[in-house]
Image: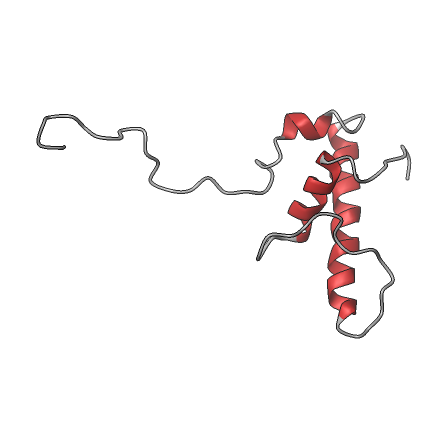
Length: 96
């Protein structure tokens, strides 16, 4: 407590909110695809492509296209894929 008896910023969190599935929000992502299952498959496939791009870039092999958004330091491929989907940078076809 502060000297004047107030608790200060009582709503301050003890930890940071992690990024990932919370950013972008799942509700926004679900507007881009037909179902949550389609979102999972779509994001997983794109994350694998991004991961392969990073692994093969050291060898000079570019089989896949790299991230279409600027990655944050230490950002994981799935988070990058979700941001790409939310930004409508990728097209999704059902059954693919």
